[in-house]
Each structure stands twice: as C-alpha cells, then as structure tokens.
Length: 472
Length: 62
Image 1 (cartoon, helix red, strand yellow):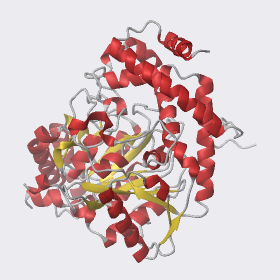
Image 2 (image 1 turned 90 degrees about the horizontal axis):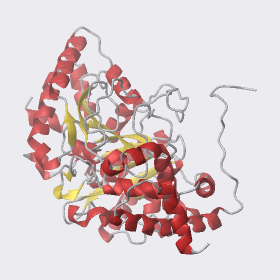
Image 3 (image 1 turned 90 degrees about the vertical axis):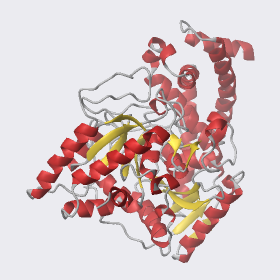
Image 4 (image 1 turned 180 degrees about the vertical axis):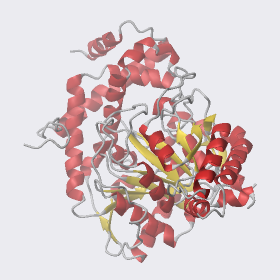
C-alpha cells in the first residue's frame, strides 16, 4: 500500500489491517516517520522524534503478531505523546529550557500502558511550557503551526499533538489538559479531542499544572479511534491520588449511535460574542442531533458565569504551589509568561484559594442539578477559529477574569469540574479553517459523550476532512 | 489597607526574586486584577459549604 494511502487510514482501520497481517506495523511506522520528516519544518509539532526506536519496536510487533501474540487494537500502531510524560531513556522537556536536556529513568503510567498495549511511540510533541498556555507558542522549542494554515496557531497547550494528528502523522496522540488544552487545539486543528472524567486516566509521571484540574486526554480523527485509545490507558493507578476505581475499560465495545430521547442542553447566554460562522455551524450541529432524535433543552445556569475566573484562580494558585521551589531556583530560565504567572500565583493566600474552592463548589452543585434535566451540554468549543500567530496570546479571545456570559466559561468548565468533554469538527469557515462542537457530559458519563459524538460523526463527514497539506 | 499597601504586601512574598521591570509591571497589574476577582468570588460563594474531600484510604470501610 502506498504511504499516502496508509496515512489516510484511521486508527480503527490500521488496527484491523495490522491485526489481520494485511499491513505490517513496520510499513505504517515508516509511512508515519516519512510524513513527519516531510512536514516537521512547517509544523514544529515535535520536540523529540524516535525513528530508530520506533522502527525496532515495529519489527518486534510484526514478529509478535506473526507468532500469534496479538496484544490488541493498539499493537503495532504508531502514536505520539505530549512532551509532558516521562519516558525512560528519552528526553522529556515539558517544552521548557529548564529541562531541555533531562532524560528520566522511568516511564509514566501512560507510557507503561502504551508499551503494554504494543503501541509504537514515534515521538514527543511540542507544547506550551509545562502546559501553561492556550496557543502552543510558548515553547522553548518554538511555536507549533496549524496544519490548516501555518500562519495560524494550533491552540494549546497540547498543540503539537493536535497538529500531528491533523497532519496524519500518526492517527492517535495523547495530551494533557488543565483548562482547555485538549479540546481547544482539537477544535482549531479540525480533529476529535476527548478528555475523560477526572481520575479515569492516571497522570502519574507527567508534569503537574494544577493537581485538581489536570487530566490526560486524547486526539484522533474519529470517536471510534478515541475509544480504542482510551481503552488502552484508562484504569485505576494507586500512584495517582486522583485515580478512581473503575471496571476494565470497554468504551469501544460499548459505542452506539442511538441518541433518541437524549436531552441536549444549550446555554445560549454564554454564546454572546461567538463568531457568526461558528454560531451558524453550531446551530447546524444541533439540528443534526435533533434529526437523530435528540431534544434540545434551552436552560440557564448563571453560576457558570464564574467558571472561567474560578478555574483560572485555582490553576494559578496550584501551579505556584507545585513550583514553589523551582520558581526561585529557576526564575530566569522560565519563559516570561510562565514566570510571571507563577509569581502572581505565589501571592494568592491560602484563605483566598479556599474561597475560590468554595465558589467552585457552588458551580459544581449548579451543574449537578442541571444534569438532572439534561444528558449533554453542547456549545461551540471555541468562540472563533484558530487565530493568526501574529495576534499573540490575546488571539484566543478568552475572558477569564470577569464574571460574564463569555463562552470561555463553557470551555474551562469541564476541566475545572472534572466533567468528560470532547470537541469534534462541525464545520469549516469561509477561510477554510475548522470549527469545533463541544459536548460535555455528567461525571462518569464518558460513554454518553462518546456515543453522542459518534452519532454526530455517523451522520456528517466534517471529521473526515483534512488540511490541504496532507493531500501533497 | 490601602490598595498600594495591599500590592506591596503581596510583592513582599516574592522577596529575593530578581524581577525585571517588565515582569514587575505585568505582575502588579495581575495582582490588582486578582484582588478584584477574589472579592467577586467571595460574594458569589458566601453561604456555601467549604469544600472538603475524603482523606480515608481508598476502599477503607467503617
């Protein structure tokens, strides 16, 4: 099979072909590495690439499968991971100058589980320094560029992962999210991004941004692929204090497209200021869900107007706590944005942090009540498409410091409360840039979120579109 | 406490860090903003329970 044909396959198809030995892992990994080498100058999506290691592991996977030792859907499949996860013997930088040469001796839980599943890690992706940012322009290793238009940002902080998947450099990537770092870049890069309920995937061995908001998330080109990737890494881990006891993951086998009677909540007041083309695409997406038998429920949750500022203050205080010693030791080696943010966080007192948590509790209770009336909360993922790199950090248009009906509140809500949420493509604007639909479920209703997204993707083809650069 | 003193009090927590002028300006601006944000969240959360989480080991039963 030609390299370009292999790269157009999604994870589900690659997995089936490798499992049936119609395609070898070595072929898929070679095609992925060739694409990576061809596009990396334009995208800067990777900090570390592991060609030799990946090809050696691919050959080993092919031998295992040939001898009847097939491990499951990720066996022999090339994946990438955000450079937030420790990987034994491999550079792990967090996108920071401080760790520019650091090589850990142990694997994070994510890497352990990917290795156990037989996945082939081809590289570690670029990000905002230690995950602090929403643009992926704040890396010591330079900005990530959006494959749909390299003059646009990929979104952050997991921008390298999103750009890689959008550019067909592997069909699956793992990132992290503290505020919106999976869903935003997924939206900007026109792919599917999913962040499960807090505690579903272990964070052990990854850098902490804010311990009560940090999640591991996934990027792929379809919900089916996300479910396969989730099954491989979800599950209890005593080394992460937030990890939850759960049954064996079976998200992929439980996928179904029935959304008949599903109650889809919409908070219209929070869509003030959303770009008209984004708003139109969102309304169109709602109509698709209605056509499939869902019911749209307009509701108001005024408490959500405090979500972004509560999230931002929590993140600021916890980041400062985590970096208390490094802040003084490495002040000049942090990038300006991160060191200033940490400095501000250092000035938040314990009683102020606890007050913020009290506000968080109130918002949580309001959402708990809302999820008695709805099954899914839907909104545009972001208020606009990927902004130009030239607009800098303000390009995202977020308003996190004011109680308001700004859409930023809906974007930061899932991580702040630990709710499962995804972004799936739902349109392309007149400039040829993708638009994202955000679907958020109640706690541990991860399957409902995935099923709703799958129902949408089964009736539309936005998720199959790709940037022009992948047609080269 | 006067606004100026409040900021000075917070900056004292950063004693020993060699802040550049640009950093200092940005930090002071955000600190002033945070004061307002905390005040708003204090009003918003007034009367609500203080958040608490279980500290017992996982699986431990009475």
